[in-house]
Length: 324
Image (cartoon, rainbow, N blue to C red; front, side, top):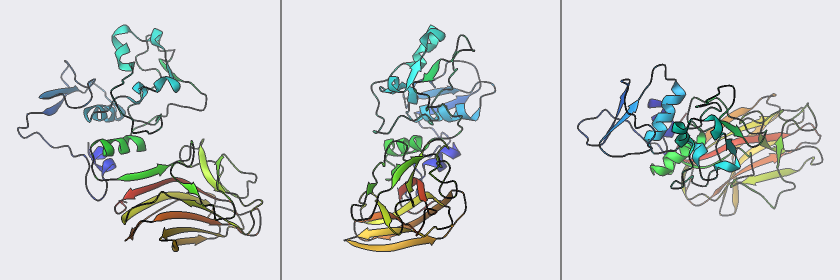
């Protein structure tokens, strides 16, 4: 419970808080005593709601039960589920098939299908024949990762559903596109989405930060000597914002990356970093305040050779100050 509270904390205040019952008419009772369980019914149903914690329950299952309690169905029950996974009902007992039924009375807040959601079953869950899966991905590039905590989309879904501050405004791991980030049309060249290593093992990442098999954005040095590329965030209202990201600056001719605030047509450099930072992803976070609408701009200034690739991944913008 404390992890859910901490993970969904946003805009300098808690989003969801679990409290010990003190006479409230609607409440949840967690018990290890066998009996009827309400964990298959997401959200508040009124009165006493019993959640059964079976013997040897693991953390992932407890986190999943908490997600149900907060009103969330399993990710694989989304209406668009069949575009991403196959359910093998022939290997699921009839009394358990309801756990895999589609739900049409929910919202996914227009987020992509999330294989990392804590609400995802493992692929052999409820199998009649445990040598065969009950759920498989439709495409080879998709996996069912082992998980113990809320995914980023789990967190933002909770924040939006409970309207607890603005919290996470935008997050992009560049797996599908540039999300809400756009290329600056006044620069010299564009960032590209890259999967795996670039043309040279002497510069740039060998894999993305998100999961090691996905995409990141790359300012490629080859063919772009002494030029710059810029990515622009969506326009943000006046206020205080936290930006968090991962950057990769590896190569003998790394020039400069800049974090810029663009406000009323004027660019102000907030942070600047130059030179080879080693063959690894580094994290960065800081908060900034603006008194008028503005954009964050990520700029890569290429050096004079091919050995100056620069990359970004997993870029977050949150309302309020950064929480370390």
